[in-house]
Image (cartoon, rainbow, N blue to C red):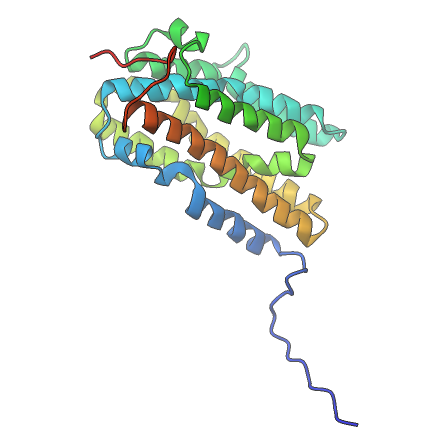
Amino acid sequence: MPSQPVKKETGVLPSTGLLPMEELRAALRAVGDQRYHHQHPFHLLMHEGKLTRGQLQAWALNRYYYQSVIPIKDAIILSRSDDPEFRRAWRKRIVDHDGDLHAKGGIEKWLKLAEATGLDGQRVASKQEVLPATRYAVNEYLNLVRTRPLLEAVASSLTELFSRDLIALRMDRMRQHYPWLSGGLDYFEARLDQAPEDAAFAIRYVYDSAKTRAEQERVIQSLRDKCDILWAQLDALYFAYVQPGWPPPGAFRIEN
């Protein structure tokens, strides 16, 4: 009877094995490298100083719709957990965006940024001129966190793993190319600290909660889906306000 071949220990986990924390983190960061909206042509134009004031107004007005639903998204996630410790940690995100008696929140700070572009804050807050495609993309984010398993809903927030780098770059380029926006950057200043703290909690949660490799793969896919939602918002902006420049009826119009 022929002897069985000796299997060499390679140190590599089989494809069905759980990824260690650092490998999971690396896989998530790879999603960011490939799909995060820092590479979108609209953001590239922004960072090169090639957007007009009107195009920045369109960005600030449409992005406000996304900002305004973030605490709603987080409230949905919080409501789906029966773990008091998780809820105590997660509710901080709602305060970060809604504010409280002691500090302004991210939504109010974003309105300040929109006003720095020259828009009226009440006009932006009304959401009446938001692109239909922006609404669809943002509402799909709410659908994701409402209908997918809690693990995947939490994983969708992990764009915060790499958002700090984009925020730092954006602030630098805005001060360089659009100095008239400098007084409206409080939102980004706050996120420099908030995003890494939130990401650290979320990645620990998904690592501890994903019990199988298949669940880890769904965590990674959820992050891909979130990146696609962010990318789609910028696709809508680019089509409406850059090339070919066709905003639909009822949407914000750049004043010449």
